Image 1 (cartoon, rainbow over the protein chains, first blue to last red):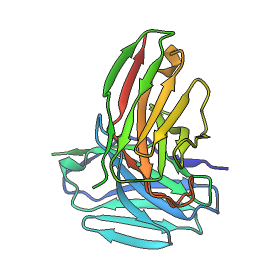
Image 2 (cartoon, each protein chain N blue to C red):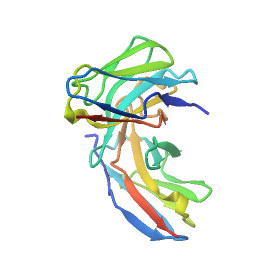
Image 3 (cartoon, chains in turn orange, blue):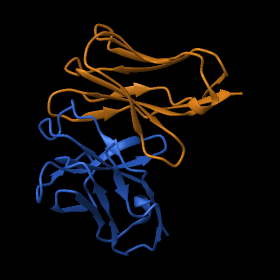
Length: 110
Length: 117
């Protein structure tokens, strides 16, 4: 089964808040985990990439993978209005390609 | 930075017309992909190509065909457009990790929004 579940939102938070975005998946063979950010009327762009359990940090962004629970998260610290976008998780393994979540629409209120 | 360019950002076509969507990447990537993106359905893979003149069906190939005559160019063709093909079409490319490997990081174009009347 290739399904990846992601809450579509919208998720609206005030500027400066910590944001938590999440995806769950069902296939234990998945081993590559990505987060893409998509601004309105643009294509998705890669934000974070990891292939192991645990945390990976890049500036204000932290990607977390829990393979035992089949759960991945993206945390955004000190959120800014420019972070307002749709965030897509993408999970892959083997030769089945990437399975994308439907995306969470995030709104950061100034 | 890898750049993926989709030549048409917005198109309006009539039912039954033949539609060409063009995509060019400038970083010598082996793999190229066509997705469509619809509200509530997310990204769905239409076709991909791992080499010149090679093509493989994705999850929703019906009503579409593709052409890859040169490594940098991947075209999506709607032989006879229908209203249910109104969508955002996204082209992507990636380095070669075995074609459809889940390890591939995709670089997307800006998208082509097609409306079929």
